[in-house]
Length: 466
Image (cartoon, rainbow, N blue to C red; front, side, top):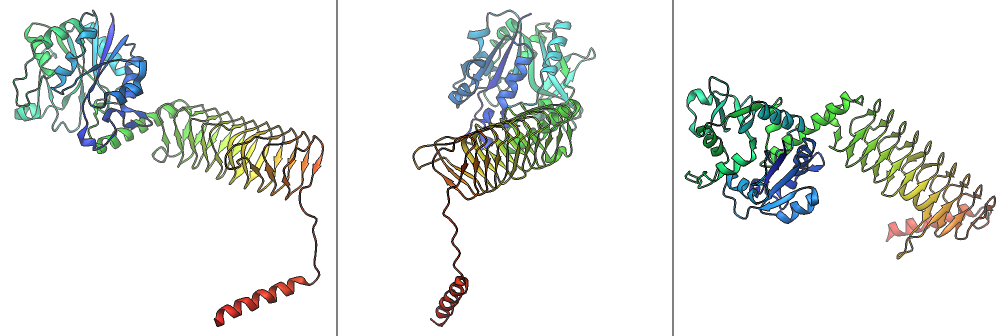
């Protein structure tokens, strides 16, 4: 049976009070509509249609060719929104799942279970419901003696008995596709809001003798929709807990889940330990047996097995096996650090490659550089890569030694095994095996320190008198 999906994403989201289109607000690093589209993809939906309205261009730019689009120019209710997809899906045989672009917590497992029940019972429509602790303001599911859905009653229309029902409508469904679009033709807008409601389709199908079923989501949070910033934060909290739990089940130790932020697409290997204050974002991939944090901030970064990163920021870079980073290092985009390296405190790398076993232990800047294996870069050393207009490359060969407080004025090459003496400012290439000294010879002036002190003291006393 062919399975399709319609994702309703045309609402303006006025309560968000934002210039950003509502379904593009991120939850754990991914726009809400991105979570929903990932869910329908994992549920093996063969075609997905996104119904867009205000801000359509922004949604289409984000989704790209990941879905088809239809425009709901005027928001006239959920039934009207679904009808906009008729030109694309109306002639299809199969089952259509209807979801919302602002319900990021629904899972593919639940959608698959919804579809399975729908097929098993031969239903024309199956509602995804949830049992919630507080149903106030939500539509109640009224079932008959046979357990099937009789109707959905909104809060304002509930009797006292119906108001006590805790099973609610999430607003998500699956339908026999042909029967859905035939029933939509019979939906009217004769209601207080003057809108065409998708819930009316259920009553139309039931009166026609069709079977209407309901599947209860295993976690009521899956039905949570985001309407404002408060709801966005609640969805973020629920998603964070789910992500952390999945990593823990996968063999990752997370010392303090509440103090750890991990986005949806992050991958972490088993036996890695994540300490509090860490933020793992984007497409970050961390290997096995790593120590991450405390205070590690990684974005779109690859960390190989056995590495350690603490109190450091790394973006769009890669860290090799067994390498130690931090504390307080900053590794900027384009950097590639080999295995068994050391990047120490207050070191900054930018678009730099370091070979295996190399060390930049403290207080240095290495930018636009290619550094070989087993190189030692001393405290305070700097690659001077920018002349105000152009970035230039510094190359340091295998086994070279760069002393403390050295300036390497790019473009410049330091050959294999070369030695640059501390305090040097190097403006010319250093051949392999050579020693470079680029500083003035030291001169000591006997007794001159007392003269300098006396001069400085006199100047200070004169300033006080004036």
